[in-house]
Image 1 (tube, rainbow, N blue to C red):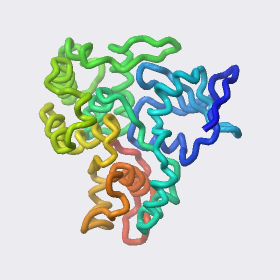
Image 2 (image 1 turned 45 degrees about the vertical axis):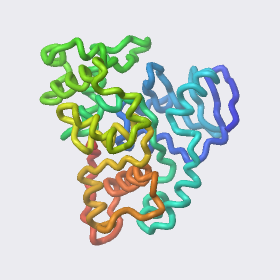
Image 3 (image 1 turned 180 degrees about the vertical axis):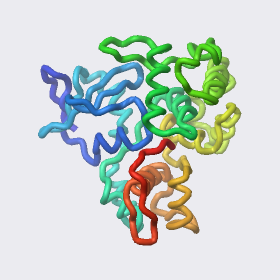
Image 4 (image 1 turned 90 degrees about the vertical axis):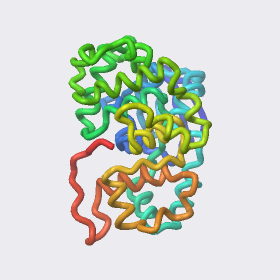
Length: 287
C-alpha cells in the first residue's frame, strides 16, 4: 500500500481484493450506509467516510496514524485475500462465489459491538437491525459530532433496565442485551480472552449469555474476535451445506471457514447458482 496525505484525508493506493460496497453491506456490520460522498459509518468510536477513487481509496479526515491504528486492522488489510481466494478457487462452488462477488473482506470489529449487534440480529432483517442499533447509539452512545455516535459500552448498558431500552423497539432482545452487558461489565465474560482461548471454550463462554446460541456465538467470534475458523450457520448456510457440501467443507478452506462462509452466504442469498436451486429472494435478511 502507498499512502498520500491530501486536503480531504488519507488516500491509500495499492489495496487489492477489496470491494467496499460488498464488504460493508453483506450482513456482517450494521452501521454503514452509502452516501453521495461514499460509505459512511462509525467503528471503534471513530466516524469514517470511505470513497473509491481512480487512485485508490480516500479515507476522509483520517490521519496516517489513525489509519494504521484503526482502519488497517478493521478492514483486515494485512491478510492476503488474493492468496486466500486463489486457494478457494480449487472448489467449484467457491470458485463461482469468488468470481461473482470478489473483494469481500471480513471486518475486524469491536468484540462488544459485534456481540450486541448479533444479539439484535436474531430473527430480524437488516433494515430493522440497523434501526435498532442506530437508536441504541443515539440514546446511549457518546456524541461524536455531525450526527454520529459511538457504540455504547457494556458498562453503560449494564446500568439500564428493560424500560430504559423501550425506545429501541428491540422486543424480546432487550433482556438479552442487558444480560450480555451485565456479564461483560462484571467480568463474568472476558471478551479479550475470546480471541485467544480454545475456540470451543470461547463458544461455551459466549453461550452463557441468555439468548446467545451457536449462530450468535459464531458471528461474534468471526466478526468480533478475528476467529476466521468460526463458521456461522443460518438458514442460507444450512441450505448451502445440505445442497453443496453434505460431507463437509473442502480442505482448501481449513482455518478460514468463516471467510469461505461469507462468500458462500452472499452468493447463495443473491443469485441462483443452477437450475436445481430455487429463486433467491431479493430481500436482505439478517444473519
